[in-house]
Length: 146
Image 1 (spheres, rainbow, N blue to C red):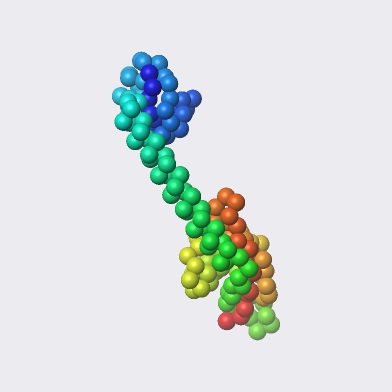
Image 2 (cartoon, rainbow, N blue to C red):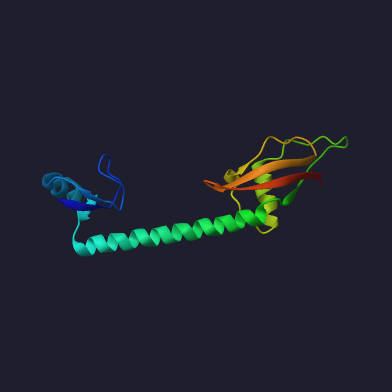
């Protein structure tokens, strides 16, 4: 029996795949529990259309993220932080500070996507923004006093 999986099923396949399973397993477990539906011609065509649409949207998202990475690459991001009279930074500059500075420049980047070493002094430091697998922008974080 051929079924179209509606969810990932271990040892059978991923969501959207057309899988060949035994009749009893397909009817009594997969279809009954809502993990799959029968692979009729119209259902197979619908599943192929959904996969094509998902691939198109994924490609558009990757294209948009690559464009964002290109605009961010090489940017200098000023981060202002409280400093004592002798130039010592109170605390350290975190990815949250960098994310807030980027939002002031018009970029909405989550702090979890920013990778940088601990910064506890004034100056310029390199940082990476990992937008997705394989799409990375390198920026310079400039730590300044308030």
